[in-house]
Length: 65
Image (cartoon, rainbow, N blue to C red; front, top):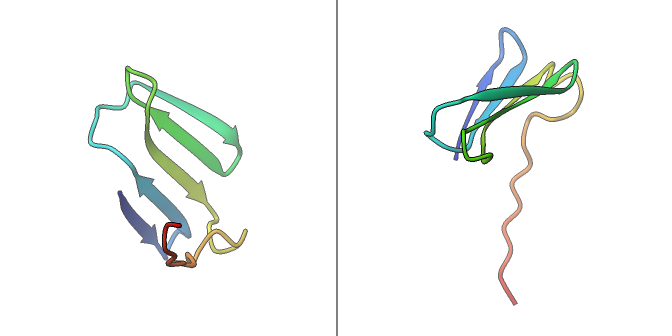
């Protein structure tokens, strides 16, 4: 997974796969999900990420039981 934040535009991109994007779906005006041909998620884009509290990311580390 690769995460990129564009601070000039307040856009967060979470790139989950290198598969080609074949379909994009808007969940609402600021969240967009891209899918590969096989239905797996390729990318999630969040517009106004810092403004809605999605960025900065909080990283939590834990241990499996």
